[in-house]
Structure formats: C-alpha cells, structure tokens
Amino acid sequence: MIEAVIKQIKYRFLKLKVFKDRGELLTAIDNTVEQYNNRPKQIHFANTPLEVLGGVEIDFAEMRQNNEQARKDRLEENRNFKCLKMIYTTFHKE
Image (cartoon, rainbow, N blue to C red; front, side, top):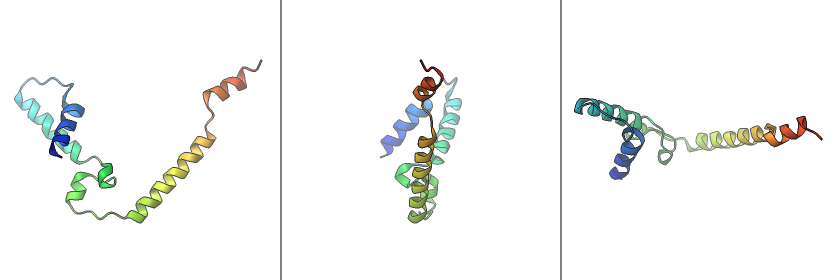
C-alpha cells in the first residue's frame, strides 16, 4: 500500500516540477504529504487519512442520505439543462 501512496505523490505532485536544490525538494515533499493527508479519500468514506487516524466516526446513515440527495439534485439539474443541440435548433429553425 505504501508504494501506491508514493506513486501518487510522485506523479500527481512532484513529477512536473523542477527543483533548484535539495532543500526546495524537501519543502515540496513536506507540503505534498500534508496536502495528501488532508484530501478526502473514497476508501475512507470521504474522510481524510488524518481523520481516519484520529478515529473519526463515520455516520453511514447521514452519508447515505447525503448521497441520495446529491443524486436527486443531479437528476433535477440534468432535467433542467438544455443541451446545445436543442438551443441551436430553437434559434435556427428552417
């Protein structure tokens, strides 16, 4: 598992950057690890790794309710969205 974390840190955060010296690289690694540990992860049910290590309790009922509401909101937004084809045909009738 640690290899997966190192690979993500390497490719997501550090690969495209150029560092002047070792100190700049170490500072970037410190910042990267902090960012990684404060990002919610799906495997932790949208909690951050630091929250999981801290023993945060997961309220599955609330999480299920939030997911259901998000699904309903997404469906409603999709129903109200007019696609570009519909807009184009409305204004360019022959």
